[in-house]
Length: 253
Image (tube, rainbow, N blue to C red):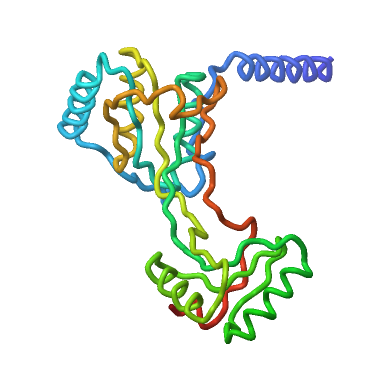
């Protein structure tokens, strides 16, 4: 009989303990255990309220000056920020109202003989130039002959005069290499909401500029397909498809 009472008491204690465990309120989770490198966290920057309010007011005033503009121009974007800016414009879904134009700068000029009709004719021309005392040259895959590459147009013209004085026929000078100096985004017929978005985008990129401009004629700028701006660039100058071998003497000029 005593054993039965003992087991009944044990069962009652276990049941009471289970009841207390199941009905107990959940403990507050300790999210600090999930943090990693908590002591290494640092606040990068906090804009004071006065400065933030001033910048917001500047953005609002700038947007007001652009209201009613037929076209606006967004330019001066840092090269590292171009992908981000292109994504922002793509999200605006402006279609053919948006055109990206690249401003290119010629960085190298060259003196050359235009391509011959075939390899044999080009080699004959090379032999003739060497007889004239012009030895620093290279034959290109397109059968053109490079006589030298220069950092300035004046240097290329001076060298051209020198090779012509030696009797070289058909030599020319022209642009050789170009670099993109700036990318300009032109937006046609922006409404008030779009101008506000452009002003905010310009605020995110401090070195960029946003201004109203006269819309170019239809043939001056090629329109981009809907959804994304496609760069519209002018036809490349008369220049080779591949970089020539720079003669040692000419490269120093």
